[in-house]
Image 1 (tube, helix red, strand yellow):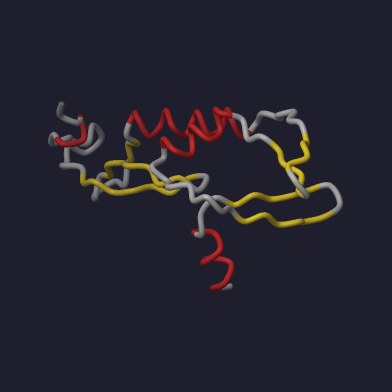
Image 2: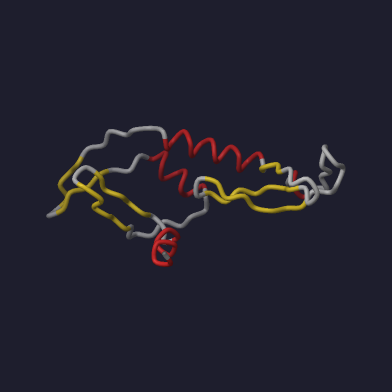
Amino acid sequence: MTDIFDTTIMCKRCGEEMEQTTVHKAGLELRAIECPKCNDKIIHPEDKLHLEQYNTLKGKTYHVKLRMVGNSHAISIPKEIVSFIQQQERLMDDMVRLCFEDMRNLRIQFSQENEEEEDGN
């Protein structure tokens, strides 16, 4: 099946041929096309849907149980979060980073992209 962005798309404002590019929003890399003359952008419909899914998941609060597994405690990550991460073609390793930020917050990091950015600052 052909992708809509594989065709030539003309800008409706100025009539110039639009060029493929990427737009970074909320940590996601979105496929887009941009007019070189007027800088009008159109985000790929599929990627726009992924951004909407991300915004929906980001706004939710999940209540999960804290369980004992051997000498450690464990929590379950809701399936819809794991499915979304896998949809984004990010490979999830067996090991993730866990950071104790303050008395009420733990941060779980699935990839090393942010780690490289933090080290560069």
